[in-house]
Image (cartoon, rainbow, N blue to C red; front, side):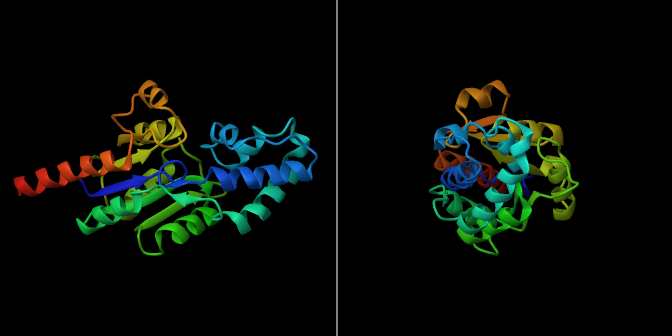
Length: 222
């Protein structure tokens, strides 16, 4: 029986590439380095800020400076171009109305994760929000997912994970959850197919219909 749905953030709940690119390019310009397009940033995100920065700089001598400038800029501009994907807030509210607990599990730093989610989805929409924290393994390690399931008092068989990237598919598989891949984010459907996502949806509307069918069947059996 479905009791909880955990969501990735970037590329799943929100399109954040514009602000990530603006922040990254600001930091790169400050260091006198070449900049990248939004599309080039989209192919580099998913594993957290540290990994993103390492994919932007020519060597480690730039890392500390670029990360510092990135974080400073992003803290003030994380919700300028970032938007919730159309239909996703309605989907989460639909799940909540049916008693399904909803959480966010992201590799974005915890403070930024909370700020983006609460700004675009409201402070009380999700039951739990968990971003990257110092000393805690990032996705695809299942630590954050397992931690959230424990806090929600939900078993692996009672939860689904929704995400747009290979990192999300691997995270769900490592945690033993059914994974729902979404191809409207930062990865093509072929990537999700290659990673063997259990289901793949091209639009939020398709995803909501999937949950409607599950919940309707559950109610009918009851």
